Image (tube, rainbow, N blue to C red; front, side):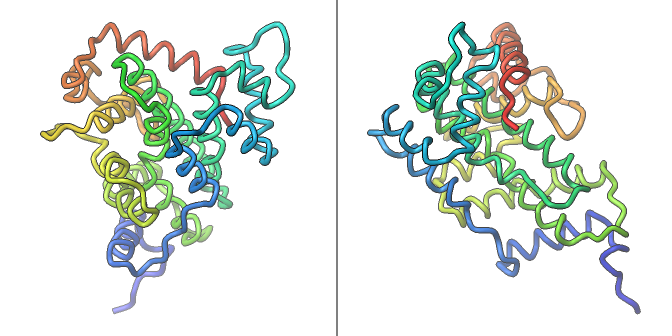
Length: 286
């Protein structure tokens, strides 16, 4: 019996095969990008001051330029234009500076050379960035510390989808039809387990791995990981406002198990949602 060529196989079968190869250790996974590793190390440094951040940022022209550009967007702009990294840091503040540095440092993970998957990656980037920002705003409402870590978790919660798309972009030739609905369904089914595998390989902590593997919910059981609840709620919130690969079909945010366990009202969620809309329309990092 003849075997199917790659172009004859469905996206679901290809993704399923990738998942099995990754789980069995048969497929080489990418190493964590150096800049991501450096960012993670910096977050763990209790002595990371604004001056130290400025010195790190100034060594990378891409990060420096983007930081200054964000500082001059309408969301943050003042009469005097920020011209240097230090100007930008002083305007943005320590927390926001760290968030932007984390985002720019991780932006390369969401790029692909295959034009057929560019739109998917761009949509996934916007969703991840919106989720990261939403997680920070929810954490601030809850007076939950370590917003930089939560921002990083939000940015990487869909790392499984990112790696699968990267692998697919190298496997599929121009003859293979890509059905958007089938691709999104396949990504959804596989991304949490693969996300956990990736972050274990990159030696992230258990809390990051738990977020990657359980962030879709819908129910959460003791012991409660508050970071997981926050990212789950942030993820759902971004779906509601259109930063998503698929249309939102979930229940109202206040009815989610995570919202109930965090004791966040629908009124508070409405306020956070409007803040995210304003923030993303002004400072989206490309």
